[in-house]
Image (cartoon, rainbow, N blue to C red; front, side, top):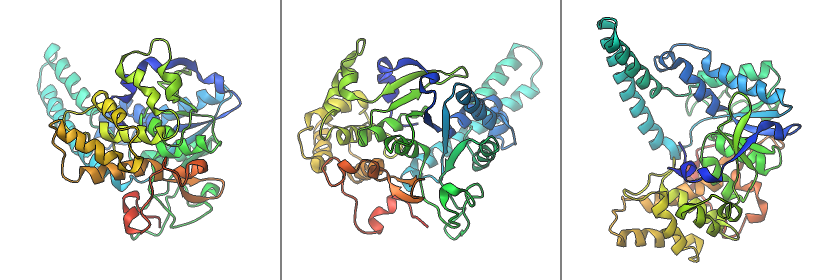
Length: 387
């Protein structure tokens, strides 16, 4: 989930922290992260499509803990998946189906086995594959919204419809003041872009998530706001503010990746980091075979002075000279991935309008730091349609 191995390489940059540091402030929380975590407590029921309260209960425990420490959570839940993630979504669905088949297989073997170590081993294998089969459903999102509203917690979800002809908003937002009672209004967005927008817009002071994509969104608009990872039930967490120059000079930050972060500071640095994420592989575009984050970094560094709009083409020509096979259409896919991080549709609760993510940084608009968006409606289809 997110940029391949990014959090692993940024591990030395994560500092110990606690949510009480944000007492009296609002934090934007990626709700789907904690719903997903909660699925592990009842993975078999979730994988088999059976109702269970574990996923929403897990989210609500974290929300109550934040409020206990005087922190105001603003929970954001995923709406409809963007078209750019269709391939990723399909691959994950196929993997879940395979894992579910294996889980059922080991479960049947366990039921046919006599009590003893062999049976326990089969049950453990079944449990492992059930956990690999879980995913957050729309019903879980609906239940989470209801639970949050019952306790008066600020929350929002991107409205979605069941199909292109549906004219009703999601039941949780049809009468929600955040959405201006706009029945039939929906757009494609996911929580990571939305929480980054809330922070950059000054509506929240920090982000709580487990997704590395958030760091790419933060880099795109040059936000150094705190991102909290690995938050436990007691409020202990790891904190990272994505300031490339500062991070590269932290004591203990070693290796090529840590030391190389400084190239992403200053003018054009944010866009270069987005291009690195696209080259290394993320949810929007797969990496080129044999090319990961560590091997992609020196390539992006080599072309850091190349005009931003031409950089991807130069990078791919270089990669091809390295003997790597460039999949057909990969350059276009990388361009779309890059634009997705900047132009992802988000919701502005102040104006009750759908806007583009990069509008949170008006100082960057019209500069080389932001890739130009195609002017035709067909050219923006990769972002999804607004109805």
